[in-house]
Length: 508
Ligand code: NAD
Image 1 (cartoon, helix red, strand yellow):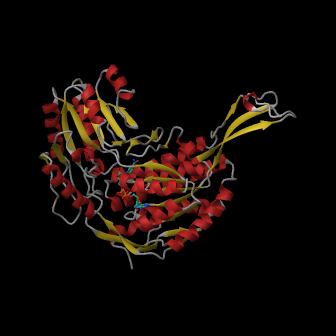
Image 2 (cartoon, helix red, strand yellow):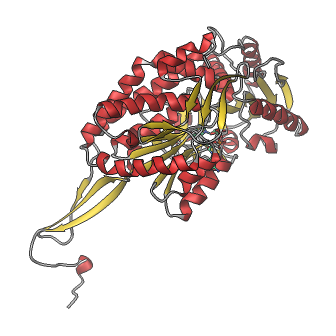
Image 3 (cartoon, helix red, strand yellow):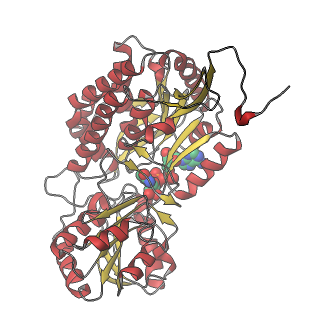
């Protein structure tokens, strides 16, 4: 078998027309189902992958578990240095990886390259972090000759299950920190983006081998729910980081909890952007366009609800409708395209079903609302006028569908913002500092990400990323997220000859 001409570049990042999908103790294996990775722009196969089976999983996990003993004993700054080298390996292949991402997931090329860049940034982050996994010294009440301290130890193996829409950035948020913290990583990417899983794993594996380290420190499997469930059940994995829908996340959490494991959840969003009557309307309209149409509405942080003050409603909606008309829809790899296809044919069917439900609940389509007849999974960017109390508004429809809603007061807008089961991202457009500070405070947005005068999407890695309520409560990437990938050890040390007890207890 050989590649079609346009896919030949894939050999530069280790992809063949047929690939094994399990990275087991440094070797590629696959004894599961044979699947095709499909280009969402034309639904034609790109390459084949033999997925990992449960037998491959068990073999890979045994090696990974064994490797954790070696990795956790390497000094943290040395681990940081290895992660830095992974960043360099990705940097050298940035363009190819970005193109593959665009080809396989369907996001436009600048977003594909941007996503790989995010992983590179995540590889730079732990270089400093690995020298700052600081504990603390706490005064002991049993003085003299006692000392209390807290230190942070690695967990062992961290499981990372990721979604199709960010097939490598989410790996970066988790794996770069988990590795620097001294954990081995076992990764299962989305079943529809196996080529990105393989390309990333190859580059990471090569860096480990070059440093004479066991490649099993980073173990990965292409596969679906069966491998995901195996990770959730596996007592060798103390922490499972899961990114995906709230529905599947809840199942994973229940499975992990049954064995008293820990879960880090990054689940569905239903993000609102509020435009106050004093806002810079141009800035707001540009932000909504990027937040609602970018990645074809398939970001967890996509703006799904636009809340506009009644005084400027007609002006904002009018300008937005004009901007929507100019959105260039087409091949995500072509220059100038702003809206690529949805990821799968099933996503396109879901969009169609969603529009029917919207109409049945009183939604008025202002623009879009249809699929685009073609061999790819293209749909029209859509704006819908609807009541905030319609049931459909409470759900995450994973496509470029924006609900526009009118409000009278800031308090009413906050109430609508907070009225959905999800709590990921939110943003307000206003020039008034008193409104901004109310918005980010206890009476404001109940989301994990609370912005002002920027879109709901496009988070930076320096902050902790994640959301509340149905979004799962997890925090990943920057700030002190690293603490979740380590176990806190509280130590009281007696370096004298007396045995004073806490709370002044005299025990005989
Ligand atoms: P999904 O829930 O269908 O799948 C996510 C992952 O879970 C995939 O790897 C899948 O194979 C795996 N999986 C499926 N069934 C499983 C099971 N029973 N046990 C274990 N794993 C299982 O989600 P998706 O369609 O790939 O992604 C879209 C969703 O992800 C959206 O809801 C989006 O908002 C969410 N998301 C959230 C964030 C965030 O940071 N909050 C980021 C990206 C995506």
